[in-house]
Length: 99
Image 1 (tube, rainbow, N blue to C red):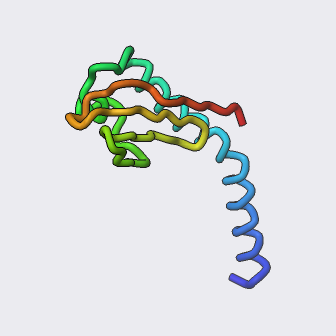
Image 2: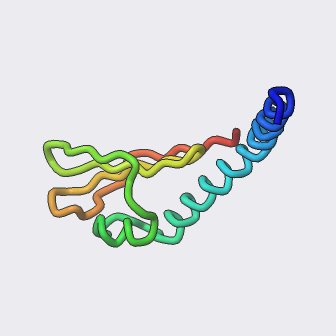
């Protein structure tokens, strides 16, 4: 394969990824959001119960009175606060974008 053919193949792969990326990001974000919706009110649920449905968090933070965990995907994120026994106390924030 000569250099021109390799460059063409790389360009085509990049173009296909550019076209498909938004759909992939959207489906990951929609899936994560639906999993959290399926949990209903998370207050009082344990960290393990939540992780069993939505998977492990992207970010973990230890705070003086417990823990804060964030689950995120390219277009959706949610942050929950837990006490020392890892029981969910509240939702600290949730963000979703269209792009």
